[in-house]
Length: 371
Image (cartoon, rainbow, N blue to C red; front, side, top):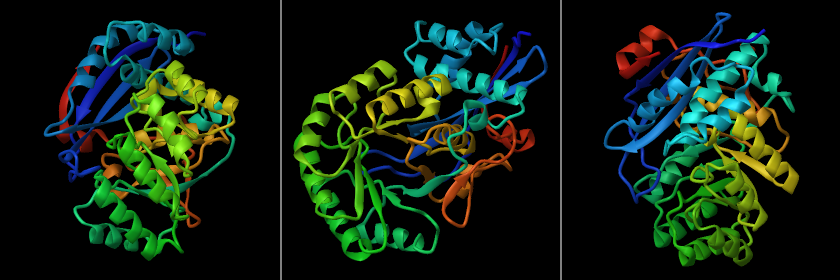
């Protein structure tokens, strides 16, 4: 029997968490939460969510796009998610990949709930847990980085991702200091937010290659510079990973893999087109024999959606836990639990498994839409 979308609710929320920097090239980032609830003809409520990132004030563009696209989703059959994904990606909408993500996540959540299964089991579980690494924001000084990393020493993280200054000279100093102090005891990832030119990326890549504690080099260049990535990989020894959140098309991600632009395929399920698109990207990576590096920074529903995708494949390497954790648990008693061995484990709730408490989030509502 068909399950038809009968109501759509979209809400934009500002949790008013402390703002962070992901590099000294930009201002502080305002992180917002966009939620979509769909109610089906058989009474199931599916929920999808996206964490937004902008400077100065909360992002409203994706909310506006989603409100417009909702009319194309109303009346859709939950069982025809691929068809809806294709339709939404043919519409005149500059944010169509992100917009499609929001609705696709809600539809998959509803489908998994109808089956009474956590999403990763509905997708076909490859495993039950995944190793966690801490992801820290950018700081103003080398000493501040060292202090932050030291606070994580007794926590069960398998690695630490550094968002550096995004300045070549200062970043070389940072790499050397981190390696000297923690290189024998900790593993690191290095995420430059796409801020180097080709020459700078080679310099940083060669410096990272000198220090065995660094495992991979993320986003040294813009995702748009695929040729630059391919050249960079041939010039340095450390594995290279693109940001992946500028290339929303699975076809473009496949092209990047085919020309040798990356050692791992990186994406965010909540931005790239939802579960439907993420499954295509996992297939691309597995066919090429490379790992997937799935981004999971964000509020609980963003983290959970990406964790379910990681658990649905054996190719994903690790769960990115934004540190500090507590601000990203806002609005819900459901959040990703990390066990004593440093692994992320989903709960037993069906679907994505994150329910927001209306009386908590209502005070942070910026805008809402009901169709």
